[in-house]
Amino acid sequence: MMAPPHLTKAFILLTPLLCGCTTIEPVAPFERGYLAEEGMLWEGSPRNAKLKGHVYTSKEASSGGSGAAGGGCGCN
Amino acid sequence: MVMADAPPAFTEVGLRYTRYSEDSLDDNKLLFGSRDRYDIDVTQLWIEAPLGANWSVALDVQNDYQTGASPWFVGAQVDGQPGVIMSGASIQDNRVEVGVTTRYFWADGNAGFAVSHSNEDDYEALSVAFDASWNTADDARTWTTSFSSSADTVNPTQGTIPVFIDEEELDTQSTYFGVSQILSRTAVARIGINYTYSEGYLTDPYKLRDQRPDSHERLAFAAGYRKFLIDADASLQIDYRYYADSWGTDSHTLELGWAQNLPQSLLTPYLRYYSQREADFFSVVAEFEQPYFADDYRLSSYGAVTVGARWAVTLGDWLLELEAERYMSDASWGLYAGDEAPALVDFWRGTVAVVWRFD
Image (tube, rainbow over all chains, first blue to last red; front, side, top):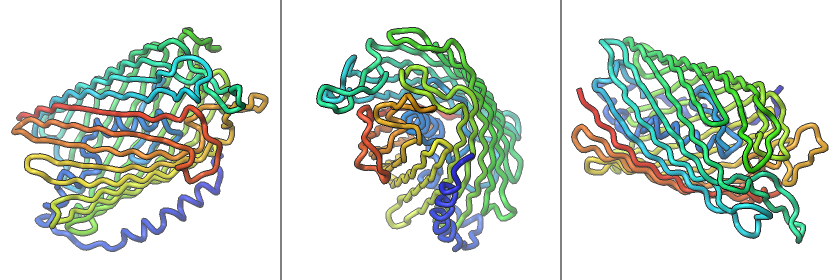
């Protein structure tokens, strides 16, 4: 099983981030124009983001974070 | 983004070409073989279209053509420093991946089902994935979940270096759960957790001194933030990921982007920092008297910096995308202690895409 210290550290690191998100203002639908800007998307170009993530995953020990993993490949 | 859900209003056809090119290995780190490392040409073709009032379907085809040499093992040079023995003559490999995704939309969410098949000379993977997103009544919060399963078969090819297996299997299951929240009329944030479990053959068959456990648990926590700056007419993008796995590796990844609106285009320079801790069984020169061992630089402690920029230009129904990035790695840039693996890689990646959207 995974080493518990890693999990503990992850929670400690993410707690301030989560707390920083607690200031929430109600935003009416007609006030969401800026939120619809292209630059506000999580992934501006999903297929490019997938390929870019695939390159990093092939060359680094880490993977994941934004969704379930896809199929593997023999990329080395 | 948190919005009412509906199929795309148009059909999209896209073609993307990507060139990936690794720097040659430094002379003083090479013990034997070719200095040239991998170059990969990637071509992606896709079509995505609405289907009736509530459905969309997408077909993706991708071809990768790869040439070059890769590190075979690490030994000691005359001066005692570690040196890389490369795989020798250039390897050539072609990979074709075909994927189909269908998606159903309703007023408060959408759900997708995807099937993908990847085939190359020495590796085959079949994967299925399901994802769903649903919004709260005020459309200010979106919950997302996804599951995937992949069945892979490894058939290493006998080439310039010997391999010691004929065929092995690898199964992977993965799940994700996340939430995004509108914070204000100019800010949105998200967090998510991703767990992946692999069981089967996880050793690299093309490395001489590589013996890895037959299971691998991976956990990633991710957080993202987007802020639109009205005066600058630009968006600030911040993404962070913490990763830990059952092989003793953990890592931090931080990416910052600035998406600047320009006439008919969006220019996004970005900066990424990555640092990982070495796996428990990694050593610069593999200790093969241990149960598990590896000298793969990808399992070593190091830090990496990526600098890049993306430019998306809209011309009527057409979209042109250009992106280039430089990836540089060094053991001294990392947050974690560990000896430097001599085969650490630097690379360039450039991509150009043309997308046509029509009713």
